[in-house]
Every structure is written in structure tokens, then in C-alpha cells.
Image (cartoon, rainbow, N blue to C red; front, side):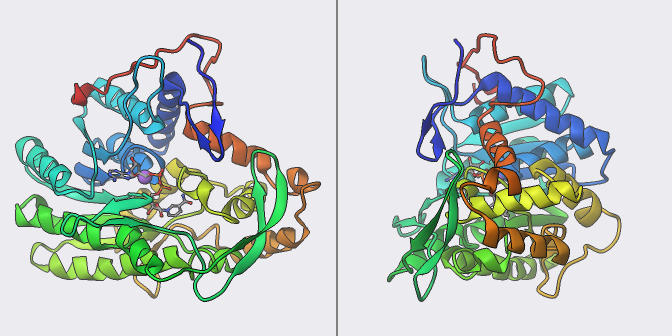
Length: 396
Ligand code: NAD
Ligand code: NA
């Protein structure tokens, strides 16, 4: 059948299997074109099927010939209904990894649960012995707590007062004002429970308890800071509290890994179109202006370029990992350049429905959004029939 994007609100209900496969091939080609990275050889990626986690898995495998285990939560296809995009990404990733002679297995299920953690530990024990890099890249709106059973929901709200600013509906291009009500009782705690560092620490504790972390093992989780424009709703909002918690957890994990000389880092990454970020009000307008400026300046990157640079110029550059005054790796350095932020701020005040297509990169935003679902991928002929019933090698 011919698969087309079917939208409901900000979600795309369909995904294109061959498009996802082509996107994986393009990412692999990019990593190979940048040359070998002297990095980790046995890698666990938690949140491995889309976004930064997928880019991390691709970079480990095709930059450093690493064996990878990927954990994710994706929907398999059913007859007449496509899988979720991360399913097709992971199927294509495994296929390419296996063709290249690389170990690659996947686990599909709730990474917050004890069961999925145990399944992962068992797989590492059986197949790899130990891992030397753990990437933590989950983005989820909910977490069922493994001890209490409580279902926590994260929210994207300002703290202390209503936040009003511009936003764009990137499908229609309509720029309008949006007001977001402040967090209420429980919102901060719930958001920290979902997107903070507790689960990351649980994973590392569990791995360490079973001696599955190699001496000198590294773990990295991803964070975001962004500009003052989005501060009230992002970094100083509920999600920012979760990121504060995640960043503080890195120090606790590093302490807990002293005896094996292990280290936990948070890497602050650039704002990019992912399923998670397109749902945050105000961010799409910021991203469309940011893309315009970063492309003009020749410093635009997608997830694969970000992670390839994180590995080659930060984590595995052969010298001490450079960090900021809060101990964080900064790969958002180009986004946060003063000249870039000044230009974005100037455009922000001008942006309207009428001029956004011209002063912003709405086209680029939309293309990246469709790309997440395997549509509009460079190098694929979309007139051919698709087969939605794709299997993931290791999950058969
Ligand atoms: P994403 O939505 O593309 O990826 C999320 C991953 O988590 C997917 O692999 C998904 O399957 C997995 N996942 C979600 N819930 C799960 C569960 N219960 N069990 C197992 N797997 C589950 O998100 P992303 O944008 O790549 O975000 C990853 C991290 O990077 C987040 O911490 C995010 O805050 C951070 N980050 C994002 C941006 C951005 O602009 N997108 C910028 C900087 C940092
Ligand atoms: Na991810």
C-alpha cells in the first residue's frame, strides 16, 4: 500500500517503513563520513528508537563499531496499520548493524519498570558481559513508579504565574498569543518524577549491583537549557525542575561509581524537532527562527550531527571531557552563541502569521517533523508500495 502522513492535532498517526529505513541509512552515512571515533565498544541506549537516543545508537555502532542494546517503547505494526516510527527505525538499524557484522539487540517495553530493567540486565549478562557506555535518552509524558505504583504525569507549565507569549501552529503557520496557566499542587513533583534523574539512577544502581558496568564506564543523559525567550515555560518551568534534578543526579551517580572509576555526565543539547519538543508551546516558533539563523550562519545541526560531535569532540576527543561551571557538557554551544541568540530575539518580536514563512524556517520545521515519521526523507521514492509489516530481527 501507499502510506501517507495522517495528522491528528500535533501527532502523525502513520509512519513510513522505507522512509525510516532510508533515514537510518542517511544517518549511518553521515557518521561514517566523519571517520572513526575511539569510543565505547559495548553500549546500552535507553530511549534508543528516536531522537537523540537513536542518533547515539547509530553513532556508537557506526562510529566506533560498538555492540549495542537498545531499549524503547514502540508499537509494532498490525495488518493495515503502521507501527510507530521508532519501531521502523529500530528494525532498520538492526538490519544495517547486522549487515555490518555488529551485535545489535533490542528490548521493547516500559524502561521505568523493574521487569524491563531485569530483562536488559539478563541480556547484557548473557551476551556482552558488561557495558562501558550507558546513554539515557528517555522522553515520556508518564511514568508508573516501580515501587509505589503511582502513575506520574509530567506537565509543561510555568511556575508562579501565567506565561503569555507567541507561538506558532506549524501546520497552518498561524502565529498567535498563548497563555499557559502556572503549575498547581503536585505538578512539579510529578514532572520531576517522570523526567528527573530518579529512574536514571535506578538503572545505574541495577547495572552496578550485578557487576554489569565495565571499569571506567560512562553514562550520559540529555538536557536542555535554551534562551530567555522560552525560560518561563521551559528551564524555569516544571520541566526545568526535572532537568535540574537530572543534572544533580549526575553528581550522585558519579559518586556511586567511584570504585569502578565510572562517570556520569549530562550533555546539554540543541533544540531540535522531535516528537517530544513539537508538543511544547512556544518552542516550535523559537525553533523555526533558530533554524533560519543557524542555517544562514552555516552551523545548523540535526540529532545525528549533534551526537556525532558530542562523541568526537567531547566524550572521546582523547582529552579530559570539557564541561561548564555546573559540570555539564555543552553541545548547545552554537545555538547559544550571542550573535545567534540576538538575531533570534530580534526576529521574535517581528514574527507574524504573514511574515513567518519568510523570516523563519517554517519549511525546515515541517520537513523535520515529517522526517520523524519517515516522510519526506531525502533519497526515497514514495510512489512505491510499502510493506508496513516490518519485524525487528532480535524481537522475533
Ligand atoms: P524522543 O521522543 O525522540 O525519544 C524518546 C525515546 O524514549 C524513544 O526511544 C521512546 O521509545 C523512548 N521511551 C519513551 N517512554 C519510554 C518508556 N516508558 N520505556 C522505554 N522507552 C521509552 O525524545 P528526544 O527529543 O530525543 O529526547 C531525549 C532526551 O533529550 C530527553 O531527555 C530530552 O529532554 C532531551 N533533549 C531534547 C531536546 C530537543 O529539542 N528535542 C533538546 C535537548 C535535550
Ligand atoms: Na531519544
